[in-house]
Length: 265
Image: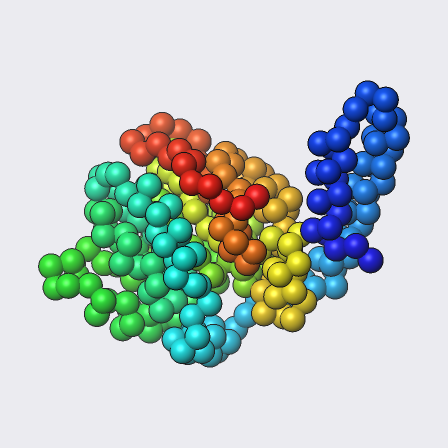
């Protein structure tokens, strides 16, 4: 059976070669392929969709990643470059969801306060020592039971970031987080998160093996828009590094993000 990635490539090719003489033929085949894409996607979700990971699972995963980081150095620099595009004001705070071992936690020093939210209560012991003594007072650590940011002050952040975290969540879990992030953001605030786009074979394989949870660009876009956000960018740095950037409606945020990097699509 064709994979979702192969089907999407065929759809793209047919759309590009579309000419008037072949209009009816191509339209018919496009519809067939899109119907197959939807059917395969629905089947994958039903078969692969899993329960959320436990606290103990996350502890073991982080311990493993201390020895074998999942993010390569090139992707890390690309993610950091995106983060720095939002670091243009110290009027508001940043929030990192699932900081893990602190791979990106030092990159939020330009913000007024740096909030960190995790299911593991011991993350503060790991991340706080990374910062110098002068910056300690700007760090705030919180724990969550799974899907909410209730401990984070309302309307306090203009930027929410998460990498290597939402890929483990069920779609129901993601929806709950997206809903609560709205409360934390100021009008015009941005969200930059990695997610699993299982329309690509590498990411689908991670979900099939039970490491990631099942999600797609189509489903992620729908969830984002249902919560009232504006999708700004949906792309990937490489297979296995898909991300979404979206914005809460409003004009309070002085930062204006513009796409400026060439990435895979």
